[in-house]
Image (cartoon, rainbow, N blue to C red; front, side, top):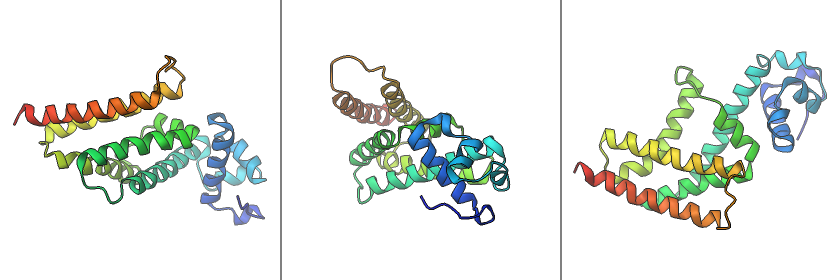
Length: 197
């Protein structure tokens, strides 16, 4: 990673990129002003000119991770229009991102984005839009759409959380189980769609 030669040339983006690099190398414990300052070869007070301490650093990093995740997911779903294919692609994109960037995914999922904050609200809308893109093709009404979104999120994020925690210890392929779960979600969505038709 290119580092600024002087503290005066430091940009907020430099700090965020350094924090993400620390996270990727060392895990969540590396997400702090002091550790990031060492990564950049500067003194911690220089970071405070760009971000409000550890809380501000974490928030900025989480927003950057969400952008990275959404870009990755959109790339994986590009060119698809069939609802089952979109749902599967989205499910695989989320799990693959978590596998490629386990520390980033954990930090991202532990931080609650606030819809009252403009930059966070934009990411929330983009994330919901990605999910809605596939689910609306099922022609769900508003209540059904909310129920299905909650079910899909709980299943996918729950599976990944258990997997990352090392709690799936039975001798059976987790890849197979994940496919079974995605197929079951598709069946459940069809059931919900026809329930009040």
